[in-house]
Structure formats: C-alpha cells, structure tokens
Length: 286
Length: 268
Ligand SMILES: Nc1ncnc2c1ncn2[C@@H]1O[C@H](COP(=O)(O)OP(=O)(O)OP(=O)(O)O)[C@@H](O)[C@H]1O
Ligand SMILES: [Mg+2]
Image (cartoon, rainbow over all chains, first blue to last red; front, side, top):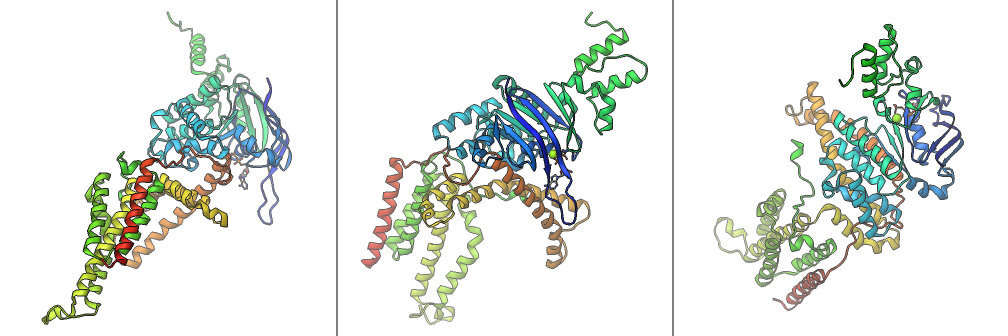
C-alpha cells in the first residue's frame, strides 16, 4: 500500500498577537496515512486537529517541516490545484460551505472550477448525488434540507471532484443523531466501495469504533496512534488527556474497577454485550 | 414574520417564457423598454399592451403576483401622474374649479406616464418571475462578458450576486433566531418611539454582522478547498444555448422596437 498523506516534522505557528509569543499549534508531527484507510483523529478543544486538517490540502502551509499529498509537496504552489482536487475537505457548518442555491449547481461547483467539460460535469454530478443517496434532491434548494442532508450534499460536492481522500473536520458536530448516522454511513460506504481514504476528525468516540486507525492529539502533538483496539483500552491515559473512551469501554472499565475482569478491547456494542454476558455467566443465544 | 419575505420572486414553471434562454429574456426586456419609451400614441401603446398581455398569458404567472409587484410603486406612479396633470402647460379643459388647472395635454401626459411606468414594471417583473435567479446571473455574466476586455470584473460580480442570493435565506433565518433570543431576554422591538425602536435593532445588527463575516470567512476557505480560483478556465454545468425559438423571440422584439421608433418618427 502506498501513502496518501505524509507529514515530516510538521510544526506550525499561528501568527502571534501583538506583544505575545507565538505558541506552536502543531509540534513536530511525523505521520503517514495509507491509501484507502479510515483514520479517526481525536483530541480535546485546541489540540490542533483542525490545524492539522488544514495542512492536508494546503489551506495552511507548514512553518517547519513538510507535508506531502500523494507525493506532492504542499509548499509547491504549482501543485496547488492538483492537491486540492485530490484531498477534499468537509467542514463543521454545512451552511457555510454550500455555494449555490440549487443542489446540483452546488455539487457542480468543484468540477466547474477544474474546467471539466459540461457533459462530464453532468455525469459526475449525477454519480456523486447517487453515491450519497441524494439523487432525488438534485433540483432542491439547499437551505430547505436537513443538516444531515446538507452535509451529504457537501460530501457529494467533494466526490464530484473525484478525490482520493476526504478530510472531515467535525462534520457531524452540528447534526442530530439521525443526521450523524446518515453522514457516517455515507463516508464508510465511500471508503469501502470507492476506496477513498477518509480522515475523520470528531469528538464522538463511538464514531471511531469502526476506524482502521485512531490518532489522538494533545497540545499539538500526536500522543496515541493505533487501531481502536490498541488505543481505547488505555482508558486512564485518555482520561488524563481530557477525553473519554467509547461508552462500551468506559462501562467495562467501571466494571473492572469493581473487581471484574473484562477485556477492554471489546469496542463495539455487540462485542461489549458479549463480553459482559460472558462475565456474568449469562448464556448467549440459547 | 421575516420568513414571509419572498425574494427573487421566481415562479417555477415550464412555459415557453420559462424555457427561453435568460439572455433572450434580458435582451428582449431591453428592447421592450426601448419600444415603450418610443410609444407616444394610442396605437403604439395599444400594440405594446397586446404584446405585454400575450407574454403575461403565456407565462401563466398569476395576475395577483403582478399587481402585488406594483404595490410598492403606487405612490410614485400616483405622484408622477398628479404632477403631470397639474403642471403641464396648455389650454385648460374647462373654466370650473380644479379643471381650470388641467389641460388636455396634461391629461394625456399623465395617463401615458402612468401607463409607461406600470408597463415598465410589469415587463421587468415578468422576467424575474419566469427566470430562476441563478440562470439570471448566468445570463447577465454571459451578456456582460465583453466587458472583461476592459478589466471589468464580470465573473466576480456574477459570483457575488449568486452567493448573496444563496445566503439571503440563511441570514434571514439567523436574524429571526437572534430576534427571538433578544426577545427572550426582554428586548422590545414593537413599541416605543421610532428612535427607541431603531435603537432596539442595534443588538440584532451587531451579532448578525459578526456572524456574516465569520460565515464569509468559512465560505471562502470552503471555496478554496474546492479549487475555486477565479473565473478563468471555469466551465459550467448548464451551458447557455440560443435555440431557434430564442432567435425568433429576439427578432420579434427587435422588430417591435424598430417599429416603435419608426412610428414615432412618422408622427403616429
Ligand atoms: N486562526 C487562528 N489564529 C490564531 N490561533 C489559532 C487560530 N486557529 C486556531 N488557533 C490556535 O491553535 C490551536 C489549535 O487549534 P485547532 O483549531 O487546530 O484545534 P482543534 O483541535 O481543531 O480544536 P476544536 O476541537 O475546538 O476544533 C489552539 O490553541 C487555537 O487557539
Ligand atoms: Mg477544530
């Protein structure tokens, strides 16, 4: 497998306010994201997640170190469009990223900017809307849609650029549980079926359950990095970072503290239920 | 209460008028205005009324909508008519009371002025009623594109217009929210003197502006992320194309305008 995103000793300072010393928003981050993987980034407020995300498609350039997108240096201005076409970005507020007042026009915005011929834009728009399950809304006004639907339109707008990677910066934060599920299912499907690399930034631990990899950030640094089964059992460390483990792991951790002996790497609800049942000696599926 | 404001006033449909190229409609309305300002006689006004009436019938736009569009200008129309009525020189109609100040010429001027304004507004409204805002901006951008040669930012203007249209509903919703929030904390927008009421609007405008700037900033980033870098090399989902019917309509309106000029010169 080849590398989709790579950072090398990435350090970043926001311009300091007058009379203050600039503190680093990102400090010496070196990591690689494999093509086709599903990576979740966690961390409490101000830990640098959004700043890291903005480096992934050259919205922000490193103060020190390098960022490579599919082997392309983000500092090279002549590669800017190539990079942004490869890495699409979905933001938190769906209202502030929809450009046009008809759904299909908005989805077409990216390909239009890339100079794709009209007939091909039509095909891409139809395919992208189908991919997020919003074909029926092609002629609707975006402001009348629900939050989850708007966010899926935003994702369709990215898909229409035929990217290799999508970065979602707390794209589910403003949605209700239904909208959140819609968006997550869509993203998982795109990852599975189209092989699109996904970087999902979130505060919801349960969104990390099915990820290939979890990265935990704190104070501009990567402090944990591994599969959900490697990261979440480190409950005490997560608590020190101001984070919680998924509810399932928290439950089992509580039970363990009460003297039980449960495996903490049962992350999904089913696994957790199985483990708890087994521990209590309740027969399953009799 | 703010939700009642309907903007753009587009009535979706699939009539001939709806299907015309937006550029055709824009050009036709310009020709129509030229014709209107050259109309001087009963005959010419009659012709234009027939043309306008036909267009209205074809468009299937409810008559109510058209008259509603006139409501804001009623005062201006009435004012112009009255001024023309009393202040046009000439022989008085009769030597009794008010009529002493009114000449036949004044009467004619007043009526034709009134007709002119009403027909002007109806014609232009008909275009906005039958054209979606987005194709209207597209058409405008396309028509003005020769101005790019003299460095006039045509694309940028069209983009600004369509983004403004896109954000109007969002900002109206936001205003509603802020007003509710202020009301919940005891703000009063409905009573008090005009100055008091104007003052009460400040706590609405300030958060609204701040949020609009924040939105603009986020939108700019999102547009950059989607490879927006100006109008150069951009293609479009919907390509504007003149069809035979567009040419026919344009030809018709050109003849109309030319005919009106000719009739005026001929003194009819
Ligand atoms: N535009 C900016 N100018 C100056 N400092 C900034 C700016 N944006 C973020 N920062 C600072 O950089 C640090 C990292 O911010 P960042 O937005 O990346 O965090 P985050 O992990 O995305 O947080 P959140 O969970 O709240 O979105 C914070 O200390 C923040 O105060
Ligand atoms: Mg953030």
